[in-house]
Length: 274
Image 1 (tube, rainbow, N blue to C red):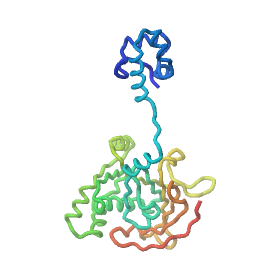
Image 2: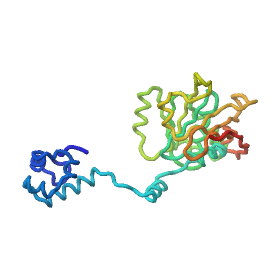
Image 3: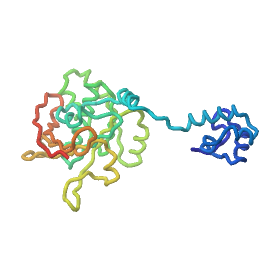
Image 4: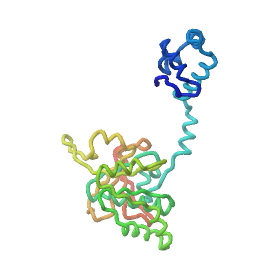
């Protein structure tokens, strides 16, 4: 807790602060743990004034406990689940991406990371009619790709235009612009990010890039791979859940990243659960 100073709370004047400090009470902790009757006598201060000041300081500086029911009610009112629009992907994500969390899609070039982001943006803007902020760090986003996805869902040009208007695009080609954009984001948002993969030097297994520190940031991580017998131009990908607080990791789904706008039917792949 902080040092006592005039104006820290109503009633705490400069004269009171000086008298308290002259008797060894310099911080909020000192005042909170002191015998106020003794302090009032030794400092010549009003006991009622000291009680009032301490009550206000404790309210400002103390952490009050919450019970589980209160936390659950807060979670229900502050959390939204946004569907990606791809059924098999939503199953991996436990119905979609969650506000207040970071969902990361990792994979090699051509694995479908950008296509997943475009599907998500189109679905949120059109089906859910919510605003989308798309931060383009590579210059790969084009309005024509978004329009093609929307045209697969609706032929109404007004609906297409309305969805496109709800998608705001920001280009961030360097770290300084990226930090500026992230600092301007306010409110509860569902953050969806993409990342490349590298191979572990010892095991040879694929792992997300950006190192160990970043690996703890995403709440959920999905690894996208091109399925066997299919090329990068084919729309089917194998999606594996590698990090989650709600689902067992190791679950895999065959995802058709070109299915947004049409009913999707894809089998579940067996995966080792850890």
